[in-house]
Image 1 (cartoon, rainbow, N blue to C red):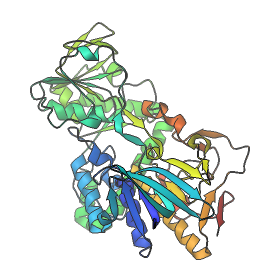
Image 2: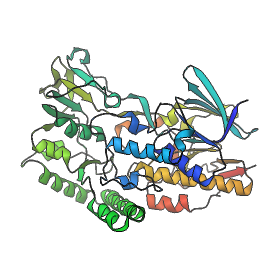
Image 3: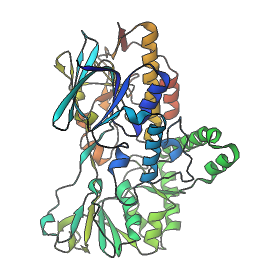
Image 4: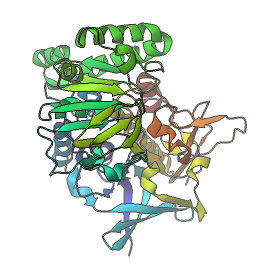
Length: 481
C-alpha cells in the first residue's frame, strides 16, 4: 500500500526546516515528511564550501522568527548558519522526519482523490507516496550545476579552474596568484577570504556592482541582547533591521543620486587615496536595481588597501597557458582561476507537475500571493525577497500555509486552488530583477500579475499585514470538499 503523508515538504534547507517547524507546532496531529535530494540538512549552506562563505543579510532577519540568533556576529559565516539550521531541526525533532537522498521528480494531482501522488528517486529505486498538501521549499537554484560562460582557450590554461559551487577540498592556493572572475556576492566574499593565503587575488569583472560595508557585529543589537536577553531583544532587533533595509531600498528607488553619493563617499574613505572608484565601483544602473553586495567590516576594501587584492574591470579575450588575456591587451597571470560567474535557476527543483492528467506548464501559470500557482490545488512554494532577507518571506509563507490549513479544517474543505478569472490581468516575470542569473532563466518560471492577489510582494511590512493577518477567502481562491 502506498504511504500517505498529510503534508509533504520538498527541501531540507533554511525554508524547509522553518516550514516543518511551524507545521509541527501548529498541527501536532498531522503527519509530515521532508524529502531532501541531498544527504544533509542545510540546502545552500551545506552545498557551498568556498572560502569565506557568509550571509549577505543580517542574521536577525535571515534567522527564524521563532528562534533567536544568539551569536554576536550579525553577518555570519556559512558554517555558523548551517549549525543554526541543523540545531533548529534537531531540537524540534524535525531531523527524524527527513528522508535524505529523495529527489522528487513528479507530482500528480487527482481531483477525484483530492490528493497528490509524488514520485521520488532514491538511489536506483523510485519511491511513491501520496499527500494532501505539497509544499516546495527547494529554492530556485540548480544545485548540481553552476553557470560558467564559454570562455575561449580554457583547455590551454595550465593552472586550475574552479567554480565556487563545486569547491574542491584539495585546492591549495597558498602563495599562488588567483583571479576571481565575477563581481557579485560570491566574488566579493572570495577575494578578501583568499587574500590571506594567496600571493595576490585579482577580482576581474566586466562591470561593477554596488558594494556597501557593514559592521559584522551590530553594536545596537548586541547592546539590546545584554540589556533584555535573547528572547526579548530578538524581535526588536529584527524589526530595527527590517526598517533600516526597507528605508535603504525605498531611498535607493526614490533618491538614487543621494544613495550613490553616500556609497561613493564611504568607498573613498575605505580605499587608497586616488583609487579609480568610477571604473571599479560605480555601476551603470541605480542602487538596488540589482542586489547590493555587503562586505562585513569592509574586508574587501581593506584587502585592496593593503595590496593583497586588486580589481580589474575588463573583458576576457581568451585564456592563455599562464592566465588571461583581456580585450584591452592586458595580461593577468594566474595559477588558479575561480569562475564566480553565477548560478543557474531551476523552478521547483525540476519537478514535473500534472493536474488530472494535464501537464502543468509553469510559464502559463500565475503566482497567487507569490506562493501558490493558478489552477494547481493544495500546493505552495517559497520564493524569498530579492531586496531583503530570504527567511523573512519564508516565515510568512509558512504562516500563511498554516492559516490556510487551519481554515480548511474549520470549514471542512479538502481542496484549495487559486483561479484567475480576470482576462484583463497583465502579467510580468515572477522576479522583476535585472541580475543576469535571473534573466537567463526567468522565462521558465511562473508569472505574476499587476493586481492583487497575483502580485509578488517585496515589502515585508505589507506582507505581514496581508499574509499573516489578511483574509483567506477572496474571489481568486476556490475552496471545495
